[in-house]
Image (cartoon, rainbow, N blue to C red):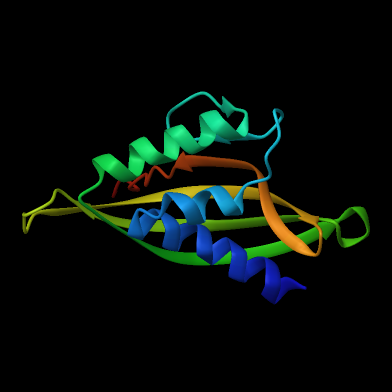
Amino acid sequence: MSTDILAVHRSFYEAVESGDVDLMAALWVDRADTSCAHPGTVAVRGTPAILRSWTMVMAQAGYLQFFLTDVHAAFAADGAVGVVSCTENILSGLENTTNFVGGRVASTSVLVLRNRRWQFHSRHASPVIDFEEEGD
C-alpha cells in the first residue's frame, strides 16, 4: 500500500516538473472541499481552483526540479486515507538562463483511496527557514 501511495505522490512532482496539466488533474479528487496551500499563501479551495493555481505555477516556471527527502507515509481510516510528508528540495530557474536558485519546502499531502486509486484531497506546503546558529 505504501508503495502505491508513494508512486502517486511522486507523479504529482512529475506533473509539476513537466507541466503536465492532464496528469495533475487526474491526481486530484474532484470535490468542492479539496484544498491546497502553496508556500506563503492561503489555501485554495475546490479542485477547479486548485488546478488553475497549479497551471499558473507550471506556466511561470521555466525550470523546476524537486529532490524529495524525509518522505514518510502513514495511513488512517482502515487504510482509505493516507498522509505523505516530505521535504522538497527545489531547484528552479528562468527559461533560457544558467542562473538557478534553490529552496526547501516542508509538504504534507492527504490522499484518499477511491476506486482502488490514490488521489490528492489536500496539500499544504511551507517554506523551510534555515536558522544559522551564532558562534561564540
